Length: 461
Ligand SMILES: *Cc1c(COP(=O)(O)O)cnc(C)c1O
Image 1 (cartoon, rainbow, N blue to C red):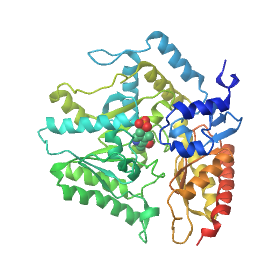
Image 2 (cartoon, rainbow, N blue to C red):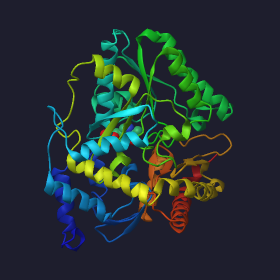
Image 3 (cartoon, rainbow, N blue to C red):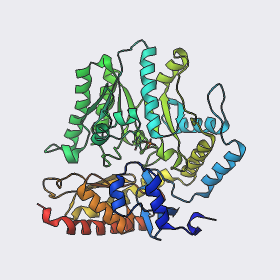
Image 4 (cartoon, rainbow, N blue to C red):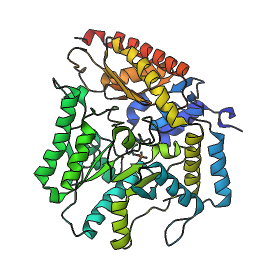
């Protein structure tokens, strides 16, 4: 019996949801005032259905993760088969199992040659916590115990545990619980649309990179362990750095002996039209956290790839690294990730993203003429549309995020799932989306922009 053929009592489910289920990133009081959760019942390819029978185009791939699309029987089968054969065993204490070994080798083979060691975790947040511990341990072992500070960017997203929320640059998250941890420093993000002013994007890219160098000099290179950045900031609003940014970051990190961490949790496994954002932007990273796209979200799993330079040193001199999770390299999750990667390869989905990218960009760009749209940008199958009250000055509506939420709700009402990051509307559809479905996505987005415009036109410049 499939879930959607069950005779669901939706009102009862909503009541139970409110009574017992505490959601992530949710204001429960206002959710309840709006009538409670939308309950998602089933899925296929790029579509989701809710309990009211609405069929919705999921232009967000869940939370940027369901890259191979919903309804993959072979992935379910891989989990089923693995659970019967060996549902669980750990990889502590001198043991291993087939799926973890195969997945580690597979992930290493997809990354640039200098990456040959892969540490498994359960999520992107755990990946970044692992890196924080590993890097600090590494510099201790190297006899450089002062090298401990991390530099990250404002408005970055690296997860929601104590360390990963500290590395992230979300003011709201920092405000709750006295983050960031000491020793984690934030610098300007490469967000030309918001911060570039009169500079060209290329000039601004250099300025944003300079902020990293300035911070290193301020702290003293002997005190700085690492810089972390997403190749494209996802949750921050799909911020695509100017072309000058990453080459300059490469140079700066190398010059001062600062490790470069490229957070590939969203970009990894094809989102940008290459296997990794590293490939798209030429980022010379030393450490790579990944998660979401690794399993297309079918089961939770993340990983950290470590360059030979670091891994060889730690293997030789580091002794035991007292770190790991019960579910590091969970067999079923590894089997699912292997099947996900097999699908990406067999169906040439990364090449597909690259082929669709110009079409996706061109269709999104048709929205640029809309009166409330300030900028449209995309790489691969990840894109953003900026909402503005004045195209000429790129100025925002007051109360950041308010108009974005109005627009997001219009999207939902018209069965399009897009997300608002403050007043930036973002999309990252599954790689199996067709050209006709991109047309449909953009048609629904325009409708939502029209409705939003009608709501806020009085506030326009
Ligand atoms: C989602 C995300 C994370 C956190 O991953 P979780 O699996 O939610 O812990 C980390 N980094 C980036 C860039 C992300 O988008």
